[in-house]
Length: 637
Image 1 (spheres, helix red, strand yellow):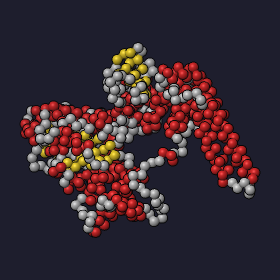
Image 2 (tube, rainbow, N blue to C red):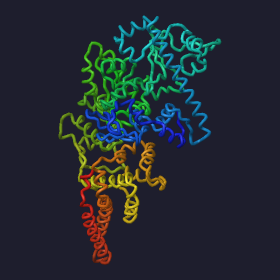
Image 3 (cartoon, rainbow, N blue to C red):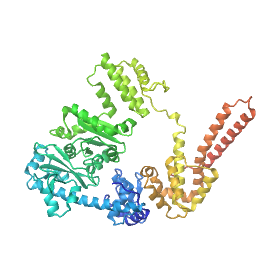
Image 4 (cartoon, rainbow, N blue to C red):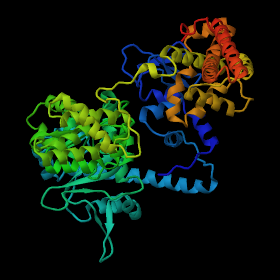
């Protein structure tokens, strides 16, 4: 569903009504400690509670991982959803009227919301009907699940598996005639279809094992049906509806998201029962595609839960499985070439799928294969060299050309350099003397003729720290200085004008992009806001989920920093601004030295003298700034 921009009044009312203790306590066990609440942080593993919730401030903060924010931010981070999605859900929960910035869109949004709620309801009732039918009249389906699939009662219940009776109008009569749902609503839910040659409707699913498909919040949005006989297709999915879009849905993500976060890895399998079998075996970071190539939307949805962006595709090892893997990669190949996703391929031996593989085996066997799964590019190279004899000229030429075609697609330079070296080692056939020659040959074929090549050997090339313009120590000190200045501004209104005056007098700007972002948000907020500035800025930043991750910690102060700021605010502001000015001063110093070094003193003696004087003046200023920043910032942060 497209969500138009929500009216600020709606957002403000949601913030006022959504009590943070109420929201957080649904996911975290909170205990009262003084005026605040504490619990184990849901965003990282810990044994001693460092997660604090303030009911008076309506904010949470973890002193372990620096996660923090209000109720909306908590739900955004926990469920990996957008700002608008969370606001809409909280609005429904706290009965807040939803308004949009574009009044003409409000009625359509309300209609969509109403329809979606009705669809969720009728789909949930249908799921209950199928579960009941499995126990009463679905003996054949139950035997299939228990005997053929070897599923326990616990797993059948966990995935709410059911049975669609063989009759043409069984579900229709239950939902429309017994439950009195409008026939148009049941049709829009994808559960019935109108007859083509006569009046009336018939059930979409008949005599099938029913597998509910849930959204990330656990709501039933569609079904997959597996035939029990020879009926084709073997698997039948619900048609797309207002709440179900096949290319944006992954089966079992609602059950896998916690496991994905914990393992920092997502596994994608082909079939429903592959995912179910793996979950039943305790491997719970698994989702299933719905028979289509993975879309960018599906991949980004699942990658929200893994920091390392590691995605494993698990398909059969036979030719059909290899083709399925190539097909399933679909749109995500571009992300893999750019290095934005750690894509791995897991082929199970003997042409088995995950469900078959686990029967009679220990889950640890699967985990071992998972741990050793090759990166996608390595897997691609394995496919290129498979069944090829590189000592034969024809095979060598074909392999070499296919490697070149693969390497050309890699846009990330570090990744491309690594795989050029890797391919060169393969083509050298163990003769280390040939590796550099193979590197040069690959480079010649990959680079366009007009592009100059760097002849530097690429074998095992590593980044050179000395090439960085600023040392890590200086960069770290600058980061601390800018962060401290922003914290003082946000938390202490009495020092704000001092900071503004110093920045203007010295013509200083924040160097780090996330600090510039936060400062821009501060400046764009009305100057009349004083006491509520911190909350207002934090709320404004919620609409920028990527940027807020880098500045969340600035919205909170530990006790030591509070005491230091109160006792030494003047020295801290001086030291912080001296660090910021030092960056500019060093740039000017290098600039004037370059001009001085490039000027001929005999041809242009006056310029030569002026450049040296300017360089010397900047060096003197650097010494003064060094004295100003002697107060140790690093001890405070």
